[in-house]
Length: 255
Image 1: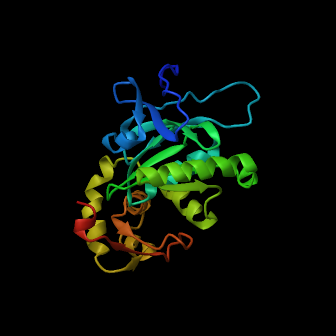
Image 2 (image 1 turned 45 degrees about the vertical axis):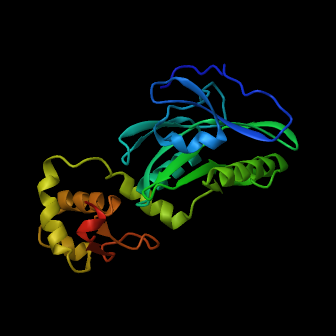
């Protein structure tokens, strides 16, 4: 868990529109950066800029999530935020992501404003996405919409994408939640990877892939692990069944 945060640094208050990012670097040093220099910082590696409160009777459900993409433990504020962490962790286009990465401190024509974005995402192509996770019941509130407008405008200025997310697609979530149980590194079963990928050189159902062993529970776990890590490809928009078709990814996709 990160040490208690104290916000000491402050941007100079002027009437002109401006934007700063307040964050803690990899050495846990507090920084205050003008937006024009944000491209110099790997926010996906930074420490959380905010303490997530825990207290008796709270409505939020904070906790910790281990990310397979970065081998780091991230703190989340709600189960809904944890769902999106898991979805990002599964996304093959995501290199890594960070929670509570910085604080926007800005001034616009409506006055000073601040915002703590939920998740900063670095994609494999180097582009960035800022994700705010909101209770769907609050998404249309005036305060949330104003925050989203300001954050979207700030992200456009920084060359980042912005998304405000509620509940994920139920089928995709069901698939990812199941496969996430197999995301951790393989140990004793690692020698099964080669034979399984060889048998899946052409599209094959999961049931057929496992049919060569009378008791295939270990092999099944390895198959799900390979599906999570996109070494076995499949259609995630349909329920996982033994008749689900899988096929080995081209070598260049996972080297």
